[in-house]
Amino acid sequence: MTRKKIVAGNWKMNLQLNDAIQLIDEIVDNSKDLSAVELMVFPPALFLLEIAKIKNQLTVGTQNFYPKESGAFTGEISITQIKKCGASHVLIGHSERREIFHESEELIKQKVDAAISHEIGIVFCCGEPLHIRENETQSSYVKQQLIDSLFHLSDAEIQTCVIAYEPIWAIGTGRTASVDEAEEMHCAIRSWITEFYSSEIANSISILYGGSCNASNAKELFSCQNVDGGLIGGASLQAESFITIARSF
Image (cartoon, one colour):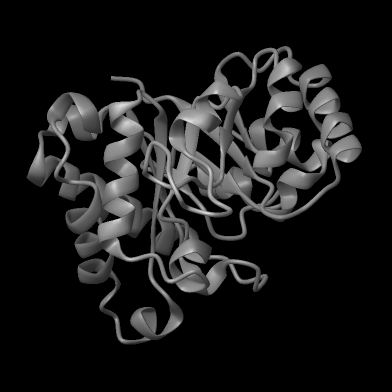
C-alpha cells in the first residue's frame, strides 16, 4: 500500500494576517504541480476563516483546541468552532503543548477522542526530550505516549490519523536527528502500530519527521523508508523553503 506523502507547516505563534494571506497565496501559486504531496498548513486560529477562503488544494488545520463542546472555558476554542471556521485537521500532543502548557496524556487523549467524534483529521505528535535520548530510553518513552493517548482507537479510527515524530532535542535548536536516528524511530513507531493493530494498518499510516526539517536536509530525511514527510516549523514560514521541502521526495 502506498502511503500518503505529507508536508505540514506549523506556523506556531508567528505572522500577521496580511503576511499569512500572502504566504498562502505564494504556496498555492507555486504548488499546482504537487498533486502527489498533500500540503497542510496550521496557522494561528485567528486566521482560519481567511486562510480557509483561499486554501485551494491545501489542507488547513489548527494548532490547538479544547475538547469540550462549549462552556465556561475562558480563552479556549472548541472543536466545533474550528471546524465551522474551515479547519479539517488539528495538531494534538505537540511537544510545546506538552512542555510549556503541561498538557497531560489524559487531556491529549480527550482531544484525540473529541477530534475523532467530530471527524477532524489528527496529526498526533510524539517524541522524547534530551535527557530521555541521553539515557537511551526513547523507545519506551515514545511507545508509552502512543499507548496512553492514541492506541485506544479502533482500527478504522487509527487509520484517519497521521503520526509526527518529534525529537524534542532537535526542535528549534538547529540540531537534527541523523538519518539513522530518524529511520530507527519511525520504524519503531510502525512496528508498534503493527503490534496493536496490524501490519496492513501500519503500512497505511503516514509518519512524519518533526525535528528541524528544512530545505537542506529534507531530501535525505525523506529518503528513509519509513519517513513519509515532515512537520515543518520555521521553514514553513517562507513559501520558497516550504515548497522546496515538498519537492524533496
